[in-house]
View (cartoon, helix red, strand yellow):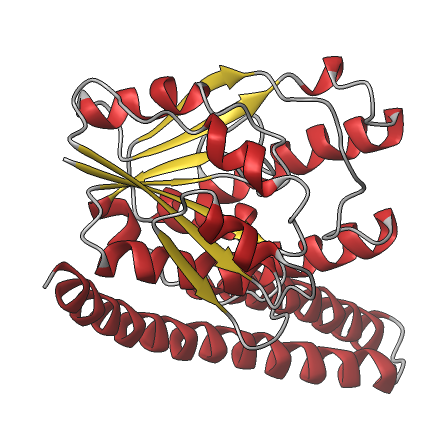
Length: 308
């Protein structure tokens, strides 16, 4: 049983040493533990420091591509290295390395394929009240979209079985945390959660330059990812809503024409426009569903190649 702990990094030369040191060197049920540092175009000495302090594998991206891209690169490299379990943690040492033992236990016991370390958001002192409220609301939205019960959707402390990792076909460029939950939820993968504690904050988040920017980008990603998996349902509902409004406009036109001998051409125009729009929405839903079928077939081929 091989465990690869991947650590996406961007200018983490001051914290990567402690992060590597905290990763346990032995876990019951695991034969090999290797550490993979994914350098996302750092301008400092992150790569050199990581190699000097025992990182078994280091890959460097040619430029800063963002957290989601670094995460995908790490997952692909971990699978290539033959990992049976992949743990993702942050390079700033936010998460405690000792918790990796508990994080991988549900996978070792075959109780889950995907495990998330859940923080107690209320007790994190450097989170503002606004951030805590947005985090709770965002987690509720993602639970509804994914059909899961994940309580902390932005936690980056996660463990994946090889099976779950091969099922991930991520497309977002901003952050992987939300997309992985929706994707694996739609794939009906078994998901477990364990409570964790975090270390003290050492720096400001490099992912979130402002709260409004973070919320808008994550919101757009949620819509995009959900439509990717539920295109027929989404556009069929939009089509039904548009046709219903068109039907009401048509009833109003008939009522006005037959009872008052009026000529409400505006209502007639709305009836035609909404009816056509509704039919187009439904056609888009079937088109999106056909594309989703092709995507699933390509995903199955990719999954076989990853297993090989």
